[in-house]
Length: 80
Image 1 (tube, one colour):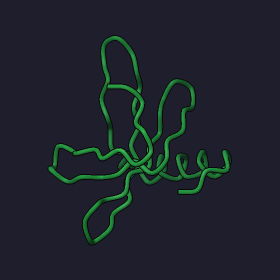
Image 2 (cartoon, rainbow, N blue to C red; image 1 turned 135 degrees about the vertical axis):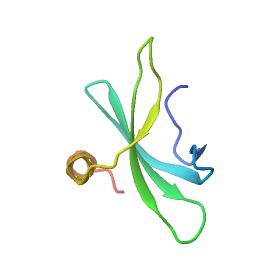
Image 3 (cartoon, rainbow, N blue to C red; image 1 turned 90 degrees about the horizontal axis):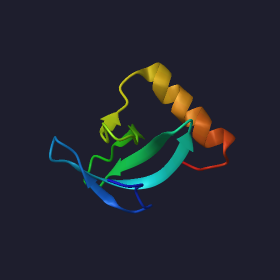
């Protein structure tokens, strides 16, 4: 897997499809904002670290980490 493109549709293990609306890189980790394609609309944040052993999309569940990601986007001037 490579970097996601804005607008790219990603199907999660749950079967739900989300569009990548924004992505930002910090310290080798890509943080991604995902918006569901079906109602009710859901917004999720995920992270992805590229290395030779692992390339997995991880949905962020911790409210503390979500706040960190929102601040990353905000500080970079990226709308989410």
